[in-house]
Length: 386
Image 1 (cartoon, one colour):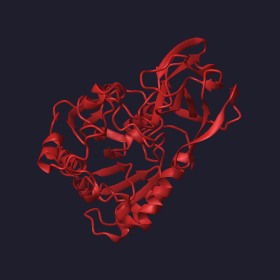
Image 2 (cartoon, one colour):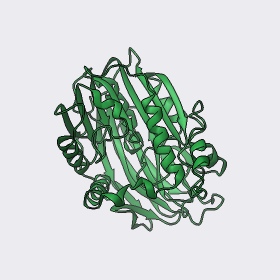
Image 3 (spheres, rainbow, N blue to C red):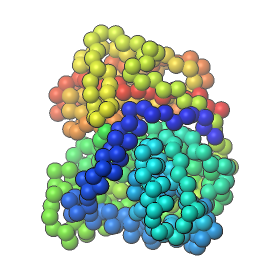
Image 4 (spheres, helix red, strand yellow):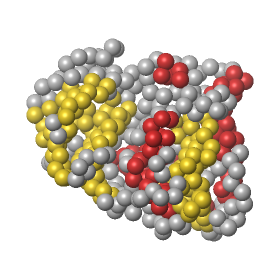
């Protein structure tokens, strides 16, 4: 069981502020009728695919909705309402408060058999093997430490339990054709491709069902008004989740996986453990999110930490290009250029226990289309696992 304690960091504040605004003006936050036809059609396509999953009778089952948001337990998956106990979990305390009110004041099949918890995903305050179904709808991409989250899901699920995930596919075919990542933005700290998601899932779970769907054509073409065309596009790639913009998986725990205990240490860009050399400045990313920014390769960053893993979160936008990273003397280069702003995550999950040093600086070369060489560091998370 992970030992990290949820904290109200900048990202939590971002979600809290958004959900408070939604509570004050519900129609402004997510008015489906005001969204493009393909987005509307995708919403109902996702619901239909979820409803088609063979879950059987849930009346004696404990069901968790992780990433519940402010809309109440399993709002896009009403089949789950027929459970014995409903548990909603979210990063945002405000989302939990609002959803709890929805459940308390509504008329749902689970009645008064519900509870709500707050969690960043690295630890779930649930007993071992206590959950029959865990649904993570459009939420795993918001989890900082996906590796720890999947271990926690494995720990709390009963043998034969069901883990259901829906998430964007960063490698959606039309975006990949343009050299871009789908759904790259300031909310998705762990955006993954289908292959990356399966790489993390398959060591812990047997995937029983994998489906794809579409929620976008391409970002410059999504305002197409033809509803029939949009609906047909959302239904494409059902059998090829590696190509669609959306992924739906249903899996069960694979016997024999060893869950690791994790202790996390956060190194925000303002942390005294982060050492800067050369010209750096503080910049605003998105809402309350800020970062340290170096605009040329003379700006360097060094972080020394204890543990056996590290998660690095950098910002990517048109003024970024390529970043050089040196972990314990081993150097690599990663692309961080993007035509739109969003997070890029890099993980070291197999370091030897001990003291490690990470160095970062911008590469001299420019990616095609890059307007600058910005290095924008948000934070890193050190891991100690046993």
